[in-house]
Amino acid sequence: MMSQIALKNLAPDGTVDARNLLCPMPILKAESGMMPLKRGEILAVRATDRGIEKDLPAWSDINGHQFLGFIDEPGEKVGLVRKG
Image 1 (tube, rainbow, N blue to C red):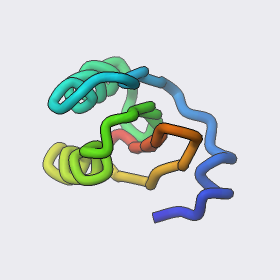
Image 2: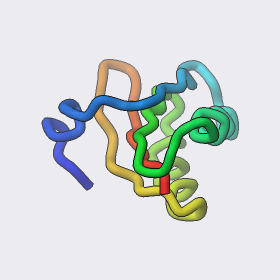
Image 3: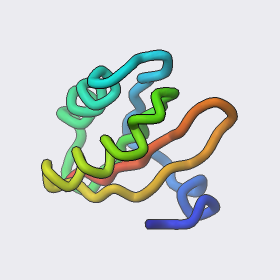
């Protein structure tokens, strides 16, 4: 995983807002947000559900994407995933 500073310097190619949604909605939003991206592009997933901390890395691995890490923001996590 990359450092918080390195993650903050990345410019995502797409972002999904999954704040205030509970499992499994953040992962379903990530799935739909990833579809239009090209291989190598980065998706940011904004979520408040703490389950995202385990779900997003697992979903990335299962689907052949590279989980880059989380940026901690007040009251939420921003997960970054590179499309595989």
